[in-house]
Structures are given as structure tokens and as C-alpha cells.
Length: 99
Image 1 (cartoon, rainbow, N blue to C red):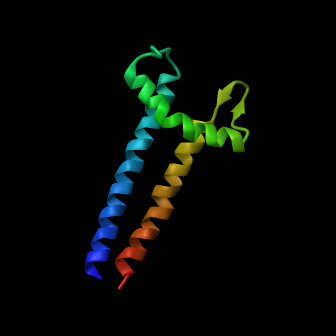
Image 2 (image 1 turned 135 degrees about the vertical axis):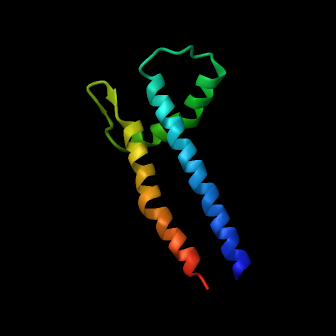
């Protein structure tokens, strides 16, 4: 059981790290929307390719554009904060109490 528990905790740490990294990617994307970066820049294209599918998913399901302002990045950041503040700690508790 300890091997499975250790694997689960390690996997949870990787998920937490990836979610934190994605939070920063979304923040950079939001900051890029205030300037007009070169759309052919590979870094800008990578950031857009990483974030646009998630933003599109929210845009299709919820009215997140008001007065020309897109609130989908804010909504995604709120979902990430919810996952980090509530879901992941509960998964951690479940894994540590798993015996």
C-alpha cells in the first residue's frame, strides 16, 4: 500500500506543478493581450496554442464576452484557484488516509 500511496502523492505533486505552470501561462497570455505581439513569434504561438482550447471551451458554454472584453482568462484562473484551494487538498487527504 505504501508504494501506491507514494506514487499517488508523487503524481499529485506533478499535477499541482503543472496547474501552477498553466496559471502562469494564462497570466502571460492575458498580459500579451494588452500589447500587440508578433503573431509569428514561436513563443507567442505556443502560449496561444496552450490557452486557446481552454478559453474556447468556456466561450462556447458561457457568455464570457461583455462589451468586447473577454473574461474567459479570468474564469479559467478562478477554476484553477478552486482546484488548488479545494480539490487538490481533499485528494491529498484521501491519499494520506488511504490504508
